[in-house]
Length: 222
Ligand SMILES: [Fe+2]
Image 1 (spheres, rainbow, N blue to C red):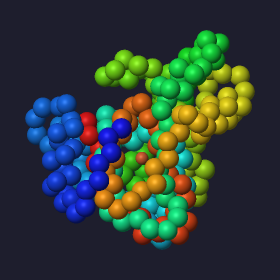
Image 2 (image 1 turned 180 degrees about the vertical axis):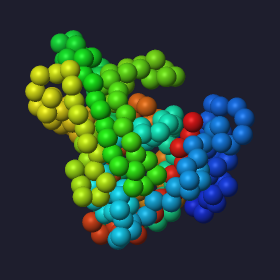
Image 3 (image 1 turned 90 degrees about the vertical axis):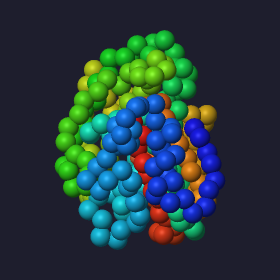
């Protein structure tokens, strides 16, 4: 995890930083994920949001790009924050894996996950993954369990197979994710720049509460 503090970074400054953090060669499109809104997503509370990411609701644990293309790193730049709520939390899944017993690891290795959501925002569709996978760069074991998203605003349906009592297993692992020493919670200040490994870590967000003016720019580095 890389943490910097900078005031007044322009979009071009952020793209320059993102390009330096990419290990890809070639044009910007090969280094930074582009969506229909471009390479920078402006994240801000929208009272009329059709998708929970832009509402004030809590955002459950996930990794970015799962329905499209998974970026290696995420760059977040906080442009405004005040009040309480909206803290971002990160879970180190490699550390979780290393904490498990051999019998727990055997159970996890058989688990398969299927996610399904309607495309109301910039992502959507269906994807399947094994719970236990390998980091493409470090070769370390990582876990790919995103929490189910139970909301009126663009829910994500999760199906778990390969384990008896799937939802008991789910509760057990999610409770582990939210416990020390696996969880890091970041209390934002304006100007914070955070870069995170999108394979090793899962991330989510607390409910916005009084922090409705919380604003971010996010770049996904390939
Ligand atoms: Fe995200």
